[in-house]
Amino acid sequence: MTRIVASTTEPLLAMMWRDLLESAGIAAQVTGAASGVYPGLPQLGEVSVIVRDEDYDEARRLLDSARAESSEGPEPPTP
Image (cartoon, rainbow, N blue to C red; front, side):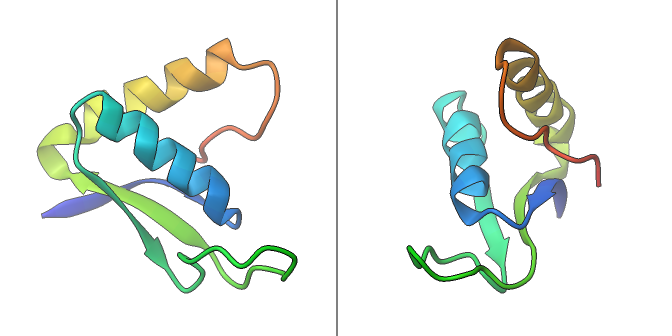
């Protein structure tokens, strides 16, 4: 089974989160109505980053840690 680890209306941000998780060895996918990137056009809906249930806690820790180290940008919302 999978679980949403973070959601946003910014597809590029979701892809960055996915890439961070994958670089740590956690399989992650971006899903949602606006999971594609269309520069210059408004994004519709919410996109989510999903991980396997067994990876959720580690993925959450990594995203929280990355947010704490970053002085800018939105934090991944808790689903």
